Amino acid sequence: MTPEQLSQTLVTSEELVYHPIAVKFVTSLSELPEGIHKFGASSGERLPKSFLCAMWGDCLRGAAPFYTTREHQLCGGGAIAAGFGSLLPLEVAEKFMIGDGKLFGTMKALRCSMESTMPFEDGEFEAQIIGPLSAMNNDTLRPDVVLIVCKPYQGQHILRAYGFDSGELVHGIAGGSTCEMVSSYVKKTGKPTFTLGDTGGNAGLSLEPDELLLAFPYDKLETAVSNLSRICRTSTMHRHTIVHER
Image (cartoon, rainbow, N blue to C red; front, top):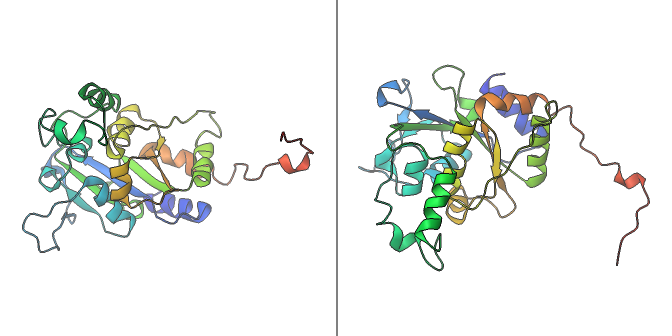
């Protein structure tokens, strides 16, 4: 199936509000395909900046494929998640990341969380292409990761379809930064996951309180999509007389 077919089937079958988006990690700027514009090219800003999660959100809401680099990032977590490398030494970030009302209680906790997401090496990638899955292709714009915003019941359908023939369970990930949890972790494990996100990431993506995020390695997505028409969608529980405790 083409990216466009995968996207259309997901949207139609599950009545998704948002079309899935795709992420492609680019090792060198020289590998960027022709015709992909740079983030903020039409903004009029000399040095346009944003958050990686907000850029993903732009594509959820219709932005055409574009590429972003380290210079565009306002958030160190997003820069790390993209494989660009940290914007600041981790110790410098302590003042706004560690302590009550912040992200973690201790520096040890922050380091543990980051290590658990299997981060890329600093500078492993020079650019990230982001776009609607339907606008990508299986050639120069072949995605690495696909992100799907959905309600829990829609996510249950998609993940049930993924394991329909294999029985493979999908494990969720939570407690860290959204961008880090669905980037290097998915690319390096080669396995889909789902996350409830985090305060910053959910704000950047403009998620509703009852929405979550699925993340698929692109090469595994067709397994789920091709089985959507085969899964059970209704419970037989109503056929039974069941007793409830009160």
